Structure formats: structure tokens, C-alpha cells
Length: 395
Image 1 (cartoon, rainbow, N blue to C red):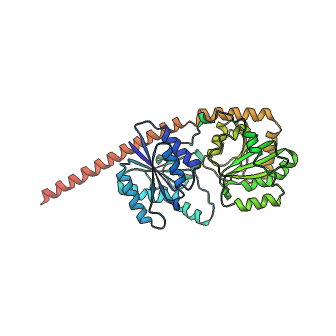
Image 2 (image 1 turned 45 degrees about the horizontal axis):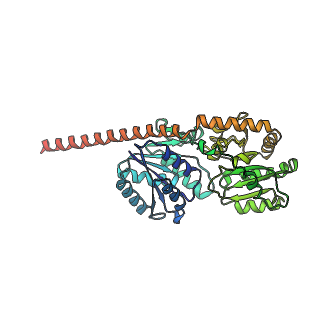
Image 3 (image 1 turned 45 degrees about the vertical axis):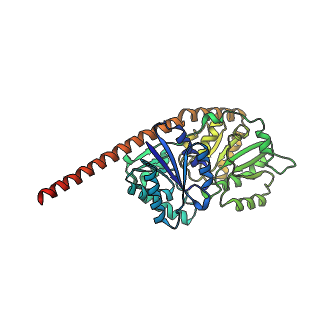
């Protein structure tokens, strides 16, 4: 069986790691191909990773606003690669992938990770996406919370599966003895923090990092030796940098930009902080837990499915700096609790979020969709043959 992922990736982040992790975990009987819209060449970062991992990665040349040409090119690629199931990631892939898959005569699946409502344009696209999901053969939701949103969008329950994101547990067991020093060097000095609170993700409104920034001055007052390190980039970067300067936190709150991997970070962090307003199922929470880090996060979307409150971390309401301060202060003041939460989180990820379990669920879905598609094609063929025979008798 040959399956393909379709995306409009502009960098190699959490969703891209999930696609590649799934491809690595599928049995040899399931071959994976990756299609990505060019996105002005930005998709190359993802496709390089795909090819280095030993998979076929294809950049689609036709792109927005040439949607008709993009659909024709994708349809031809599907047919040339003999793809049997198409998995679409994101609203652009969903909108164009569904049409191309229909033309190619194969089942199409939307992988629904969440909606951000980042700005007016994105809200419009995401509205169209929610309407479009009803037309998919199947929708995979990455969390129970996201499945509820997909169901609310009008997708029948029998066409929704919950297949959660996974973590590369075995890759996160080594401890980098230089990690703490590497984090310290992120700060300008001369007196650098010795305890580090790490956050990671796109700097966009729905991620709530502004709330963390508002909590930072009080936390720095209570714990003078702490520093905040954020990994990631996005449209709010310049505004956050200015706010950091205004608050006088330039030596305590650092925007460290994009990095290829955070595996080295978790052993040196006091905790990971995730202040989002909305989430599907946060990859960074999975990775931090797999790396043994305690977590403070907001109780939104699929986050409570990853972080068990009072067991592997602390959950707080979104948009409340005071609640965030109290939870972070509680963990900073209790090393034993941090260690217990870190160990429990690592165990939870190992038990519930393995790539092998994810792959098994996808294989079952692929097989079901291919069988259903074959039956539909057989029924249609029989119907056409019967119609032709009846027509012959009438003549």
C-alpha cells in the first residue's frame, strides 16, 4: 500500500515531526510519500528532512493563486506515484487535496490538529476548512478535545477517529551535561540566571506567550536566579521583544529563535511552560514530558490529555497571569514535586503516546478506507455494466 502526506509546510516543526515519526513507524507493507506545496520555496526545509530520512519528498510547483493548476499537478502526482490514500494536513491541503483525491479516485483523510484564529485571513480559511471537513472520507483528530470541535463542525461521528500525537521517547533519554551552560549562554550577562523556565512554540496570539511575559516580573522578583528561554518564532516576535525591554527583562527573558531540536533542553530546565489559549494536542508538551520535564500549562484543548494535573504537571485557566504565577512558584519552590512530575510525565508518555500505537491505528484506518473504496468502485462498475446491458436489450 502507498500513502501520501500533503502539506504546506514552511519549516520543520511539530506537525512535520509527527508525519515523519509516523512514516518511520509504519510496517514495510505501507510505503509513504510526501507532497508539499512550494510556499515560495520555504517547504524545502521540510522536504530536506524527509529525504534525509529516506522517504520520497516531492515539491509541488503550482501554487496559490493558481489553484486549478495546483489541483491538476497534485492529481497527476497521485496517479504517477500510485497513491492509495491521501492524508491532508492544514486548510490549504484539505481544500485542494480533497478535489485532487476525488479526481484520482482515492480516499482522502484530513488530519485535524486544531484551529488558531490567528488573524482575519486565517479565520476565514479556517471557517472554510470546517465546512470542508464534512466532505472528507475521514477525519483524524489528534485529541478528544479536537474531536469534539470536528464533530461540532458537522462531521458525522462514524467518520472521525482519535489518533493522538506521539513522542520519540527513546530519543530523549540522554542527558547533555553542557545543557545548563548552553541555556545560560542565551542570556547577555554579566550575571546570568542559574535556573531556567523553557517555553517553545510559534509566537502568535493563540499561544498565550504574552500572558507568560506578564507573569515574568513577579516571578523574577520572587526568584531572582531564574531566567525564561523561549524557542520559536512568529509574527509577535518584534512586539514581544519590545515588551521585554519595556519591562526591564532583557537579562531575564530571552527569545532564542528556532532550533532544530529541543531534546537537549529538558534535562536542564526547571520546567516547561505552555500558556496557550487553544491547542489540538501539543507536541511540545509530549516532548517535554518524554524528556522528564515537569510542566505548567493551561487546561485547553488536548493539553489535559497529555498533562495530568497534580501528577505530571499543573494546569491553570488560560489568560490568567496570577494563576500562572502561583503554579510556577509552587513548582520552583518544591524540587521533589518537580522530580516526581517529571518521572510521572515520562512514564505517561511511554504508556499512552508511542509512535507504534499511532502507526497501528493508522494502518487499520488505511485498510478500512481502501476496502471501502474498492467496494464502492466495484458497485459502480457493476451498476455501469448492468446499465449497458439493459441498454443493449432495449435496442
